[in-house]
View (cartoon, helix red, strand yellow):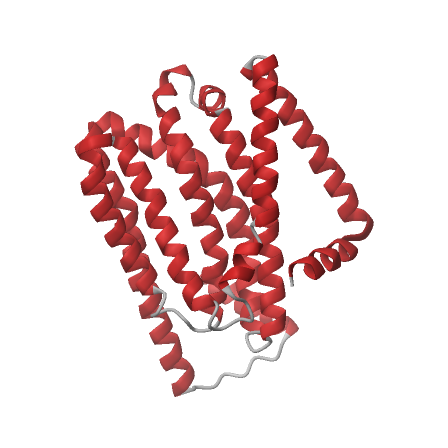
Length: 298
């Protein structure tokens, strides 16, 4: 309450607040809140469903490996995406009737995130053993196979957040529940089928496939409200995937001539150099880069 009072006070210093009751606005707010609450329930269910099957497959030790694997992968991705999401949702909501603008911003954001996340996922798959050893220690190397599988689901989950922001800005919340329900059912069916055969790894595969189903259904709703076809959306991933193939091939060749740890250090230093160059270009003329990307994507 104190925080709300402070926020209202600061806003009143910049804007003139006009208190007015609107039945339509209140009704829309209530409907949106109920839908988001139900959606959060399904997300909570999805989060705990895979852990339930992990417990059946691997016991307490399996839950520890699975949970730490997801945390290792999702925490850095979510830190990036959630920061972008907080800005995008507001921007999408303000300009929800400007379809061309929404499409352009959405495409640019998705392309940039894909260029970052997908090649990095290849690096994680190749150097999973080293990464786990550095972060958690050698005692947790049993989670390496899980990390190699779950990184794909973590990337898909992060990219779906941007689609969700655009859908919510258009008031599409109840329809998006279909994505949550189908994803949860997919997770339950596949987990119950795969865990007796593949153990905890089977549940990790089920998680990845459930996230894929989730984003496919989201995309089905998305293309109905923006100027974007399924082919155009998939085209956003061509360059990131080609870059990922190049990254994977390069790292595989490095590992043939050097030890994994030396190859990993080389890649880390190279990425730092690339990021430094990208930062410098950003300082030079970011508007030119955005114009080039937007022309090539749309």
